Image 1 (cartoon, rainbow, N blue to C red):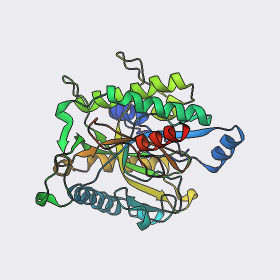
Image 2: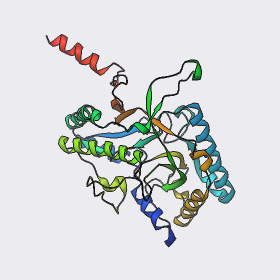
Image 3: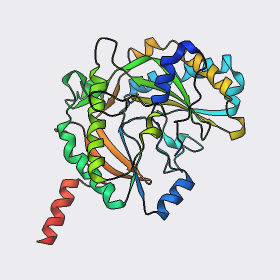
Image 4: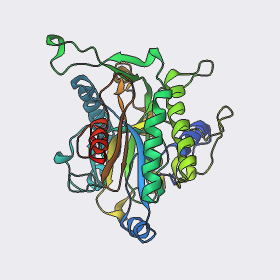
Length: 336
């Protein structure tokens, strides 16, 4: 996997809080390298990756493109050599518009804009399947709070108003830059709105509940995962649930290095970090909402599970596109 655990940290002592957040950032890409994939196949292991895919309205896409342009202009102005060494794209772009690792031709690259919930999971096929079934069964016990629910925007706007609900997250008003120690790629991320000094955020509480539920089912299924690769080396344990603190986020911009030997140095990356943090995106962030309505499991290039976050939503579908409930009923009828 293109692990992001080994980020270059800021060398400024006054930014210790930023360093702590940086070390806790989970890997926003679900990508298994060739060597890992080969090793897993030899051991008979399969993979799974749990995340919330974000539903992008036309308004959200406009805001993300505006943010993308602001970042590119800032980087081009302050560090012009970076743009010639990296290929930048927004994660709101469709994969058929891209080239390189995250293009349509690479089925293992997880390019859809999303929020990661849990470390990458590895295990035998039957254990992975059991985990996915348990998560589907227990997901109904983790209901989003009412203040996170919003009405889904219809593609036809006011012509056909929608009554469907989605889970809607606020975002912080500051961007963060991270770099993969393995690939040299750069990730620009928006953090989900977190707790303040005095008030716990409903966003963080709900996301942690999902992570805790997946953790409990992963333990029952006896699958493998590593918190260190997900949150970084210096883990901070949450006193309430005993799990590591997770900095929930979505990567909105990816900078893919054209030649590995031309990747950023530690000093250059520290400068990128400072430039990104100083960029004022408050007018964009205050209007931006990250909306989702499903929890997905992806692994080995296939969709392993697709489950609604809200009980009144349509049934989940398997990789063939058929309703799971319908498929099971047909199986029972054939057996009888």
